[in-house]
Image (cartoon, rainbow, N blue to C red; front, side):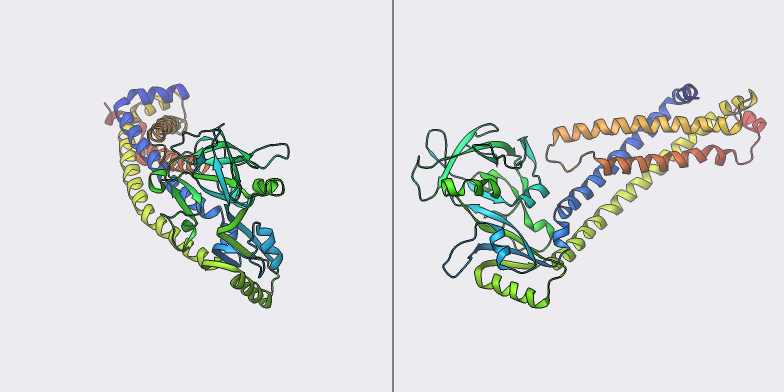
Length: 410
């Protein structure tokens, strides 16, 4: 049957090439559309459980732990002041940076709690994202943006407390990854700051051309490991998630808000529930904008493919009638069309994957990629096409006898 299926494809080669091109268009369109949807939902899903919790997203300039102006360097210290609340924070390291020759390096630097690091991995041109710290390591891992210092993966730089002079108490920093230009990171810069309205506003696309100063990203836990020995620290600054537990009381919420209002230098404050609502509205708007285009092109292309397939099947009806005369059951003869259609769909899918590979190779910053969701969508498209194509022989015959088929195809 498989050999006969290939024969029927070859017998109508030009029509099948046309169908193949149309199916490739459908598959590429399906992959592109689903990739865009996955791309936007990914950034929401990174922090979905936070957004859908009771609590607030703060943009803090700093947080003072007491009336003596002691600035918070650990989100856990803030948690201790609050009741039934979890705190996850961003930080600004308060350090100087040097190269191997002792020359000062100018960086915009940022540190995150492990919860943020594990939830979002920015696009990297080389290397890896930040791993968990090792107790045996004598260095801090860092990821750097594109930079004019020509610093790359495997290079080492140094840092110390801003109140120390070089080379006093230097800590080694090992570069483990380099960001893509315009990589999406959690946080904001002088050129990307905006109030938090939905999920997309907690991110920024970091570009050296726009910011002029390279970005250095570390984990807060690694800086904390060297705090006592080298007196380096990072202050809580930037986006801070404060989520409340389910059993928190209204009195505790009011008390928590009072503490945060008294000790935090708040730039903005957003209710997490409001962010979730606005985020879902934004995502729906994106779906509404994308789906009609996809559905329209999909339907037109599928109809065109099926029309071409109907012409191909009509030409093959004489062969199917001959197979039936030779003893092959008619239903089995008609299944040859299903096999031929499936082969054509597989070939078209392989070609579409090659096209996607070429697109992503040429344009590395494209949102188009091939994942589980995209594969599932393509399988669904292929099944729809194959099922409809399987019905074509029966629809075309519609009670026509083998004798009439042979007479009509003389």
